[in-house]
Picture 1 (tube, rainbow, N blue to C red):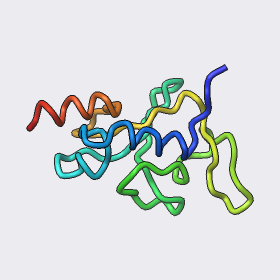
Picture 2: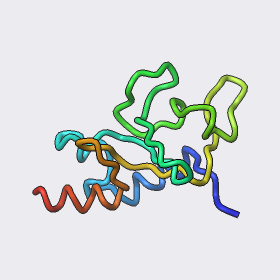
Picture 3: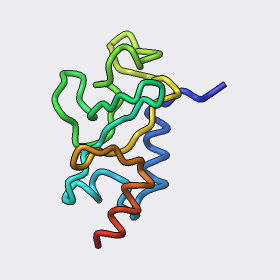
Picture 4: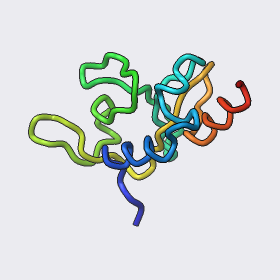
Length: 108
């Protein structure tokens, strides 16, 4: 069974990709915006706060109900579908964290 994505996973990814260009603060200046891809549907969701405003980093709270598996009583998202991948959108294209890191390296 696949693993649902949680905020802990996002933190682990940030630590893994720190210094590579695969995190928001390292690629924002090159036009990358944090986003999520649902591999089941192909839908791309920009990272947003719960109120729908764009977030400058990966945050599960703004994802739509159809990908959310678990919420706390206060509405915070605890887990999303295993088919969700964090990454970035740049010029209309979705990049995984690794693809973004590779692209940042190539741009430097």
